[in-house]
Image (cartoon, rainbow, N blue to C red):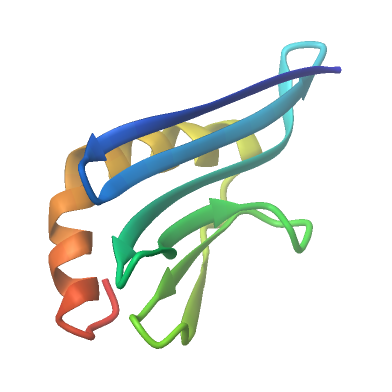
Length: 103
């Protein structure tokens, strides 16, 4: 099993956390999430993962409430989608989160 993990600072108060593992070049587990610092604490805004044995996206509001969206795709495709989505839309997600909306 091979694991990769990194943390990318997107702004002074926004970062992307990425972790995935592979076996035989196939993604077996993953987590990619956008985190925003508010009130001195880093909070999840968007998280893509496979924690419940299926690829899904969790969207959080500033109070910690979560909306789960099933992606209906394999883990490799979900990992690519997660990285691309957060890279392209993190500013929009951050703005909605800070306004108290679900991103």
